[in-house]
Amino acid sequence: MRSFHLPRDGLVPFLDGLNKKLELIAPVMVEGEPVFVTWSGEKLALDSENPLASPVEFFLPQEEVLFRYVQYSGRYTFEEEEPRPRMIFGMRPCDLKAVEVLDRIFGSDHLYVDRRKSTVIAVLNCTTPGESCFCAQLGTGPGSEDGYDLLFTEVEDGYLVEPGSPAGTLVLRDYADLFTEARPHHLAEKKKRLDMAEDAVRRSGPLISVPLIEEAIEEAPWEEIGERCLRCGGCSFVCPVCHCFNVVDRGVPDGERLRCRDSCIFSGFARMANDINPRISQGERLRNWYKNKFVYLPERTGLVGCVGCGRCSRVCLGPIDRKGLLKEVGI
Amino acid sequence: MSGYLPLQAEVIDIDVESSNTYLISLRILDSDRNLVYKPGQFLMVSVFGLGECPISIASSPTREPLQICVREAGRITKGILSCRIGDVMGIRGPFGNGFPVEKMKRNVLITGGGSGFATLRSLIDYIMDKREEFGEVTVAYGARTSQDLYFTSEYGGWQRAGIVVGVTVDVTDSSWKGNVGLVTTLLEELNPKPGSAALCGPPMMINAVAADLEVRGFQYPDIFISLERHMKCGVGTCEHCTLGPYHVCREGPIFSYDKVKGML
Image (cartoon, rainbow over the protein chains, first blue to last red):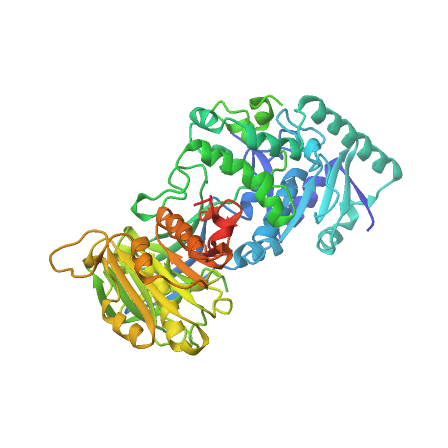
């Protein structure tokens, strides 16, 4: 596919134009923090750290309506919502990898699949990684190689724009006058910037690899780590791969059945009626959290369930250094 | 259409099995077709406004109507038990793998206790209706007290179909004339011939019975246990029912004992 160049001052007109046709989701500053929101022209927050709330939430929201039930003389009718066409602009490569894992888990979930199909993903390559990132160690960033519809990389005078799917190409087509053909020096600059970002991640981040983590999971003092856990569930709510959910009803006789994000580190998560709990201690639950990401999910999907975004470390009140599990066991 | 949309099922009959356990017969309203299922599979049953929970199918696919056996154990089961004939509940499914009935066509021992016995009743009725395809069939059923025994009116029918039936209770009272003790003591008396086995019950009981059966010449890969877990989706995505690498809702709820030994 052909690559393009978009000058810096062309970005807002491009997004403005798209915003008239579809719901555009992009990162903006909200009370000093970058957050992905439905964009309505606010100043974009593209230079800051990857937002703590992953844009994956637009595929698996913290709370969503599965369907509405309406009762009439003892019988019910059900209503479902149709997904709207959307574009997520500015998703980082690590989060795109998380979407790839979720695609394999939720491949038969109509709500997820419909939403996914109606969403164009425009990834922004990560040239300013954060301190907690370890994507380079896991091979999930800082650059995306595939899976996106559009790939943006910041270059000196604007953005290199590479379509990765027909949907991506079609999005660009109506704004052809904003783009010019990319030049070889744009591609060279992309490589240089990503190499620098990768070096930065490797320098600041720990020495991590999947086999080392697997080893650490077996050796870690889980009961002691569990004692330090404040059981807030923050790690699972910010993790772009975490997808545990609960299903609850709201409303009688008419109402809605909701899917709400849940966390497997909560004590009641696996608890059955009559108070039977297969995972009693916090240590067991944390071990299960790691084991699922680094052992069970790879077995099930072929992909590691951690994308190195470092959000769990950023949010943990513990103190449990999530990416520092290896330090915990002295490897 | 989303996989979360339930079918509506009308309650057409309610049998009281014990003070807190009812056998509920259902007729599906939203579809002309009957539910196609296997013994050992389960449904997600919902009361609109309260929510949804996993309930094993108590009827055999060889029979009508569809039945579920529900014991009051929490908020949603309490809601299910408060239904009356003519009320509507939601059902999704069937989910799970079910018993590998083709592999079990030889001597069969069906044993267990507790409310999980509902799923074994589906298997017993299935075997009854295909009796000539199976060898010697033995049912060894234990409950806490005689008041907690389910399907008491059906044991005679099972026996007439050539099934050996033994029943035991842990705690006796004046009205009980039968066996007292654990299921393992009942096995001593019934002395089932090796073949395949179907088990349900609390983990301690499953481990004890499996160990006992091994001594009797049963192989662990032929011992199938029915597991219970908290479930929300039924299709292996919500992660509530995980057991090590398995999702009990999808790879289970029936596991051969060799797969889950040490994990219970």
